[in-house]
Length: 477
Figure 1 (cartoon, rainbow, N blue to C red):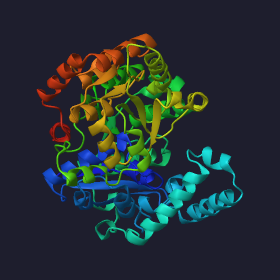
Figure 2: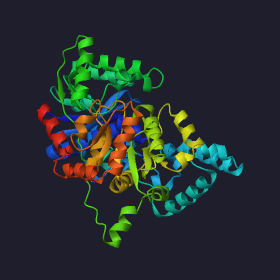
Figure 3: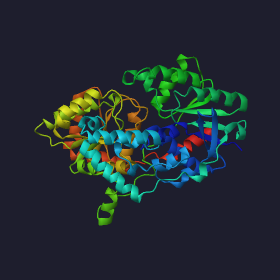
Figure 4: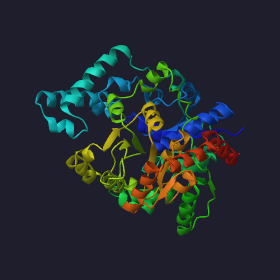
């Protein structure tokens, strides 16, 4: 019987230093978890490239069924094969080092030294303040007494070389990001030629080629070489949207490749869908805020519009902020606060400088740095609407996630975003500040318009991760 090996190399690399799951890794985990549940662990395995041994290792995937929600601590313990510090026991500026003992100790000592020297600039450059560092250090110390170090999951300790267990006709499915891993790409060619393993690759976007101006250094060239080289081992491509499929067909045509492409649109719903929020009982109110940082609770005390995603130029955050500045200057408008929820990305120094100089637009804009899944759900539940005015996307998970919470949004009318938003959102021109402003103004001022769009959401069966998994497995079969 054919066995499916789902690659998790990028997830392993990601949880070494991150405390949240990015969009691409979330896609892979959502699909793999469901594939294991549908077909069983005998047919569905996971695999990873081990740079140290220069081999591709396979392992059972049962551990993914142990958590309904994606816990970065659990994933780190299970995939890294060692005990990890829980996120709650680490000050925020040290979270990226929590699973690297030597680096963690170094930066812990460095931060304490800078605290002793009263070096405010050191902490400000890391997104906090000296006073904030002291408070977080105290919180982490309290939590460390209550939350033990997470031990590695025993179920994933046994890892065997793929060539020892794979048979001809088995499939290796790569749903994540493997560009830049040349050793892995070379090994995939060997797996195809020597073992007859079929490799299927999900392409999330061609942004490095379509919108290279938003990326750092020579990443676009690296991406081009990776995608071109993938034709040497890939049997079939999957595209996450019709728009990505169109871009991929253009690329393959350019390099004279006729490899097949199947489109598997991603989900609109977040996870298995949010539970209905009981706003009546005291217990439900306490549960809704439990685990949400105080800084997040403070910024959500007033009505707000939510922007989810890495803060980077492609997300068009500067134009959106300028539109907000115009809204607060309009005497007819009483605008909500604008909250950006995500980690800081490439080329946003000018934006951050403007934010600082303007006092975060006099307090009208806030940044919720690296929210957890629990915090993200809280932010979605309580926002007025969402905003995603990116200049280009491969899919647009935050738009769909907002819909799954019953929230409409202001969405750029480009790339794949219209595939996600359908007729349930207010569209705008991403390259026009006035268009963004007017779309936001309509949802702020016209309660009837917002209610109309929210009713459309209620009447629509949103695409789920079960739908995505079923479509993918149907193509594989």
